[in-house]
Image 1 (cartoon, rainbow, N blue to C red):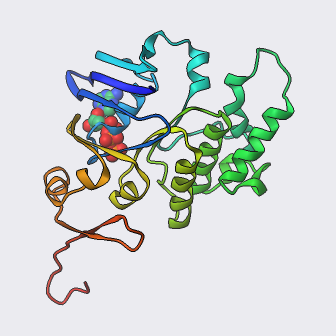
Image 2 (tube, rainbow, N blue to C red):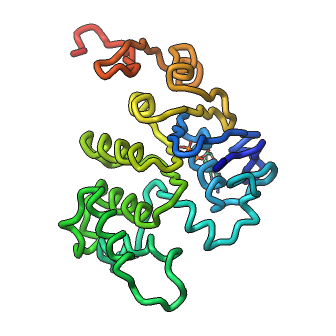
Image 3 (cartoon, protein in one colour):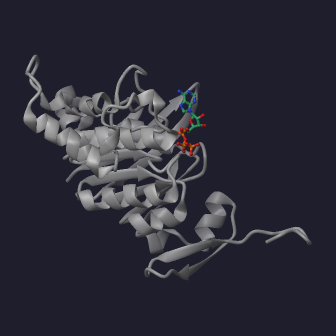
Length: 260
Ligand SMILES: Nc1ncnc2c1ncn2[C@@H]1O[C@H](COP(=O)(O)OP(=O)(O)OP(=O)(O)O)[C@@H](O)[C@H]1O
């Protein structure tokens, strides 16, 4: 058992943005969350890691209401990488990654070799070993994203929640970060916009539309032309790609004379 939501609702200003969502992720598997802009993906992820309180319903971790889990225990279990995460500008890359070790250290304990090893390993995994001492604010957007993922890895979580982790990343790093997430073998919930990446890297996919979970299942069950038309308003065809996964082709109308 790991993370699950049971009929959770959340809203603001009298509107519901997460509307009766029940889902669970299997241990050590990757659950992708897809849906149009504003469909409630980030809001749901924030409920899952208790950054927001549900208005009704329950989020559970190993069957226990997450509201009852101690702050430190939760931080040892669960890491969250937000969209556009910011960090104090005076910090260096390794300072940011070291923050991931906080839940594992006793109050006033000195920095251990185990902590340092975890930081170095996390930086190596995202390919930023050489940037150890670089001021964080001098990094590119994609490098900052990778540092935040390294911070989450240094936390050694059993549950990893990622909100659009491929934002800002070039295609090589999109593939390597999602490949890394799969290889970690932790329980992962990841919001993604790219439907082909979701199909390639997720064991299961949940689809949000206007705050509701409208489909959930294996990528081949969920990513159908009918669902993509209904939820995203886009026409597609689906074929078997070179690596055996389903590949979504977007059908775009071109004006006469326009380059296809
Ligand atoms: N604190 C808030 N106050 C008012 N509205 C909010 C608040 N937080 C989120 N919303 C609204 O909730 C809706 C869902 O937002 P959310 O960020 O969860 O969507 P999303 O699916 O992650 O979108 P995107 O793909 O654009 O990142 C949006 O319409 C957003 O404006």
